[in-house]
Image (cartoon, rainbow, N blue to C red; front, side):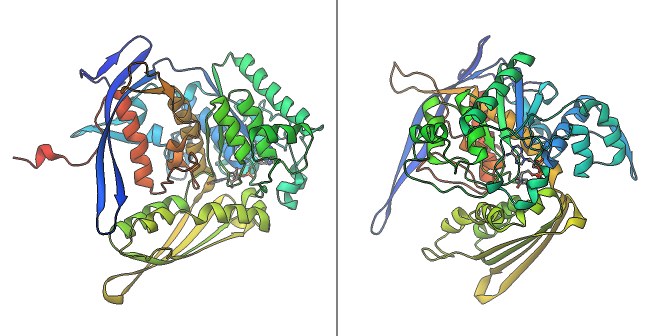
Length: 503
Ligand code: NAD
C-alpha cells in the first residue's frame, strides 16, 4: 500500500515521483560573546524513479554465519515457512529490519511501514549469490553456523544445498591464523587476475538472472587495518597502478570493492576494516558509484548510541563506559587475534564522540569519558553473543549513577536484517535525484557517492570528507525517515504536534 500525497508540491508521473521541497537549515558562527546565526532556505526538487529494478546482491563471506542466516531468512520469508519451537509455531519474519518491520507516523494513529513511503525492492524478489573462501554449500554452512533450529535447517536444506559460494580472494596476512583451515575455495593468480575474476563473476551473475542492478556487500571475516601509503592507495590512479603491479599490501576487501566499483556496483562494507582507502573513495567519486560502511551496527553499539544520547541529552554526564563481549562463533575466533580485534576496537570506540562534543556544559574541550572495549572468544556460547556494559555517570551534586546492561542474543539474527536494510535502502537512495532550484539550468544529480544516509546501520559511519559524523541512533533514523518523507512530499517529522497544543 503506497502512500499517495495530495499536494501542489508533488507530482506523480509514469516514471517519477517529483516533490518540491523547501529545505530549511542554519549556519552559525561563534563570535566572542555571541553566536551569529543565519537561517537559510534551499529550494529543492526531489525526483524518485518509480520503477524498482530487478536487484541482485552478492555477499562476500556468503557461507559465514551472517551470509547463511541472511540467505535462510530470505528463503524462509519468501516461502512463508513456519516451524515448531518449544513455544509452538514460529513464522518467518524480518523483525529487526527497519524497512520491513518498522513504521513511520503519517498522522495521528496512522502509521505505515517504512517500505510504503516510496517504491522499494521487495525482499522476495531479491536474487542472491556470493563468494566464500570456504567451499561448503549454503545448506551445510547454515548447519555449521548453529544459528537456526535443526527443524528449520532441514526444511531449508533442499532450497540451499545447490547454492555454492564462488571462489574467493584470500590473503592470510589480513585475517587471524586460525582462519587458514577454512580456506579451501580461493582464487590464484595476480591481484589484477583476481580483480578481473570478481568482475567476471558480477557480469555472469547479472546476465544469468537478467538483473538491472547488482550490489556487493562484505560480510566476510574482519581484516586487519591497511596502512595508507603515499603512492600506493592514496589516489585512484595509484591504487590502480598498485593492483596492476601486484603490490603486496592491498587487502582482499579493497580488491572486491575495486572490482565492484569498476563494474558500477554499489559496495557496502559490513566489517570494521578500512577497506575504503582514500584511493578507493576517489574511484567511487570519479565513477559516481555508491559506497557505504563501515561495520554493521547491530547490538552493543546500537544500544550505546541510544543510551549515551539519552544520558548526554538529559544533562547527565557519562564518565566511564566499559564494554565486555564474549562470543563463540567464527567471528569471535577471528577477533581473538590482536590485529583483527584492533579493527573492531577502533570501530567501536568513536561511537560516543559526537554526543560528548555536543555538550560543553558537561565536558570541557577535549574531555571524554573513559571508554574501554573488551572482546573474548568463548566457544560454548556459539553465535549467542553476550555483551555486558557498565555506564557510570555523574549526576547532580557529585552523585553517581551506574547502569549495568547484560545483552544476550544470536549475533547473526541481528545482522541479517541489517544486511537487508543496507541493500534495499542503498538501492532506493540510488534512485533518488535532487536539483537545486536557484538557477534555471540546474540539473538533477544523485546523492553523494559516500552514502552517509546509511549511518543508522553502521557502527563507524563513512561520510563524505569534511562532513560531520552522526552516531546518535535516533538522529540517524530521523535522517532516513525525513529524506524519504521529503521525496514523498511530506513535511519532516518535527514531533511538535502543534495541532493539539495551539487552541
Ligand atoms: P563468519 O566468520 O561466520 O563469516 C565470515 C565468512 O567470510 C566466513 O564464511 C569466511 O570463510 C568468509 N571469508 C573470509 N575471508 C573471505 C574473503 N577474503 N573472501 C570471501 N569470503 C571470506 O562471521 P559472521 O558472524 O558472519 O560475521 C561476518 C562479519 O560481519 C565479521 O567481520 C563481523 O565482524 C561483521 N559484523 C557482524 C555483526 C553481527 O552482529 N553479526 C555485527 C557487526 C559486524
